[in-house]
Image 1 (cartoon, one colour):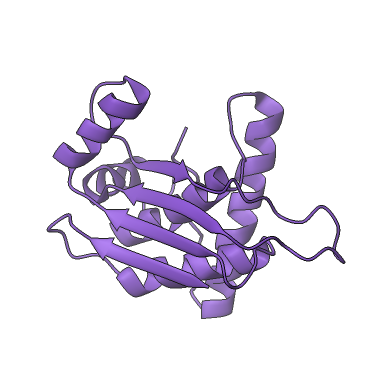
Image 2 (cartoon, rainbow, N blue to C red; image 1 turned 135 degrees about the horizontal axis):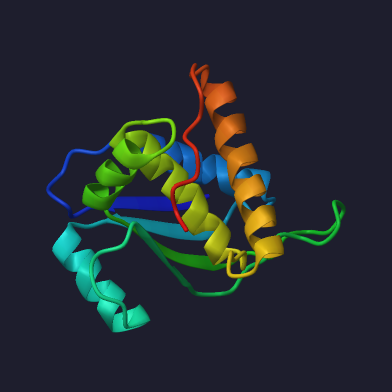
Amino acid sequence: MSIDVNNESGTEVDEQAILDIARYALARMRIHPLSELSVIVVDAEAMEQLHIQWMDLPGPTDVMSFPMDELRPPAKDDQEPPQGLLGDIVLCPEVATQQGKDAPTEHSMDEELQLLTVHGVLHLLGYDHEEPDEKAEMFGLQAAIVDGWREEKGLTGPSPAPTVS
């Protein structure tokens, strides 16, 4: 799996954890091991520009995903996953910090960025949360991936509750 993490935000973030959880999520979703992903961490101003340009919405947001090859997990366990370029995930630590503070179970910026990384991966793989049933499926999968990764890493305490909407 080729995953690049590029921090352009000016904020110190745990890039290794972002890389690790992205790799874990893609493996769990059975994405081809030669697929490529880019994660870019930007400041609030850059995120706001992207949010306006691509979504026509004001203000910065927490995570944006820009799919390339529209890869999907294989439908059956015995199918070979396709290889390709997944796309880009853009994260904003300033928004993540505030969301971590406002969450039902307060957590750190880095924990929120890990959650948002998984959220972004799922969007790249075609998951969405516009409809209640889609939201239940995506957020359930997101929680299972984050919990599985945290367990594998030996991290204790509750995992962050979803704060993205």
